[in-house]
Image (cartoon, rainbow, N blue to C red; front, side, top):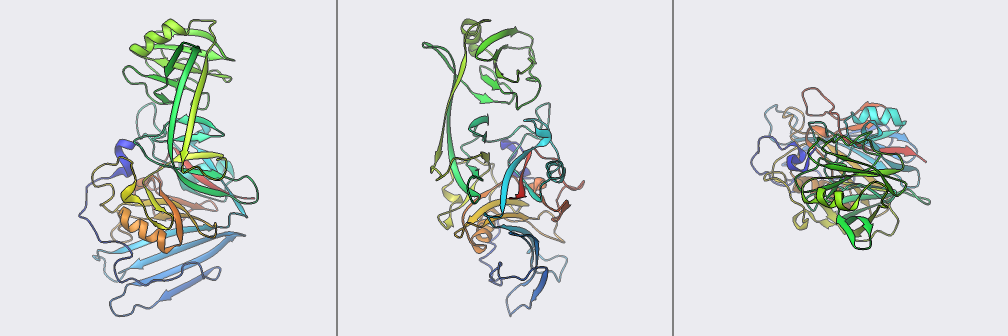
Length: 402
């Protein structure tokens, strides 16, 4: 979903109190027997909770939590939460792009089936319409290569499967990138694999699509094997070479391209990506999200520098989150919402309280709203809020056994 339409806010609802602040039943979610169902009778002033736990595979547990007042259809507070608890020594995580491209959308269940994943949740924000539908609305970094730049100062989830276990870290991302034609001819890259705005230089990589999908109002220099092989002026939609990239420019940036990226000239991309805090591993990929929910075992959303729409944090919405516990176990969480008879959704404060209750020491909010979905063994286990059901998204976090 796009950054300007973060989590499909819809009509704003009045601010609610925190999920864990109300007198709910505080329980250890992980001391559960496989394939069990437990009903916790309510004490006076407390809400009912029903939990079901299933051992999906070695090191993969699926927990469904139904909490709140389920006795009245008009009750204001009821939640359905699905949680995957993953042993980092038994699984690995992968980024699944819709159609294996940088543009386009696909349902998380379809991405998981096509890639052979055991489980999945939806991933980061993305553009929801137009020819660039599915384009990420935040950082995407794969094997050290930038495929989408950070957006609106929002953080990302860094993932590594190297070694004996999978590791996660929530990081802020600072990116500086330039097209270098010579020692004295450099031009800032304004973005990667997205629509070009006035005066910008956008760099398109082969992971995006077959062509740039741009219109004719600009100039595009096609670079392959380190040299400019063609320059398309006032044409657009340049083919992207498998061994190179396209510098697509407008306005003052177009003038720079015409002057410095002539056919036959040498050209290279220089980029510097800095993650803060620096994780103790080299990430296989980084995917954007936001806000940061938990840092060092404490609530962190209030200090997140990201820019979000009014009401984004205070209103209750379906939510997706990823986190890690102190023991290294990974949490993937999907909270249903916008369905008063089933689940009302959560504010960011309520989602933070839930992640802390689940034991997270680091956690990040991902895209949510109608995008929120969890897939286990080919089945969508949550209740997506869109009337049509599961929404096609730009990407998904995929779970595989090692």
